[in-house]
Length: 293
Image (tube, rainbow, N blue to C red; front, side, top):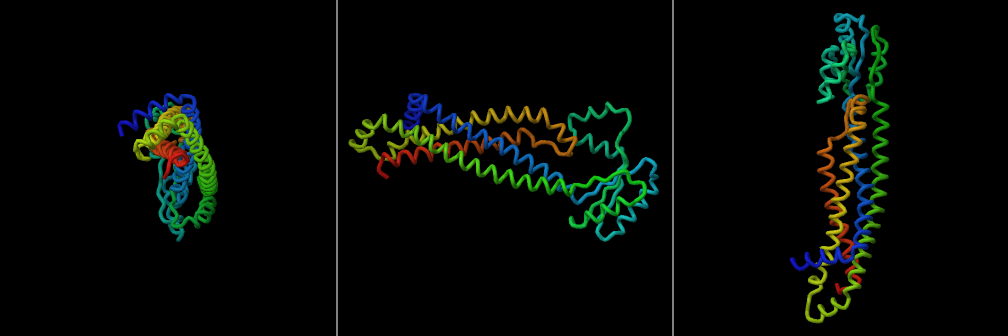
């Protein structure tokens, strides 16, 4: 094993140009994979966050609506068989919830001298299919200033998520094949350059797996280097995206981007596994052409 590792590093640096080309090819593929991964996970996270509000209808009340009137509206809504529950949310409670969502940025909300949020009623429906009916009933009530209802948004996000996932799989599958071919060609050039040495090793009794070892490790090394480079670049890009758009998404959709730590740690593991697998597959394919199986 020690011999294989030493020879793999020698071959990696000896064939610097081809090794660099292989690393560049796999890195480019992983960068595209990483961007698709970031997009799919965040779109899915936003869709799930909105889905949780899908069976929830938030009815905003005018300031002129007294607490007793709000209680009467709630009793009327709870009398509907489609309504699971209804509760009153004061503007003070709404502000506290909003601050909790902002996390360490909550101090920005203190810039408002007055609480701009209205009182509201939170209605939970028993079945998603009944949400339209309940929303229509709520709109007919006196003192209603507006209604938040996410059905159309959720449907669009689900369609978008499915489209992105299918497109990502198609592109990634193509790029994986291309990367395997590039690594295979790199290893094949190394095998050709050492063809005489390999013949002597076979003549003196070296097994095929002893000969294959350095080339297999070299391919895995190419994949691992590509994975490290890709993970660093994607981590930098995602940190900038989070910095620029994370707060805007939180304000608009009440759901922020997935945390950097979770995304990058998981993506690094995926990159490492994929890179090593691509390198190993490329090496195996190349060696099968030159060595007896």
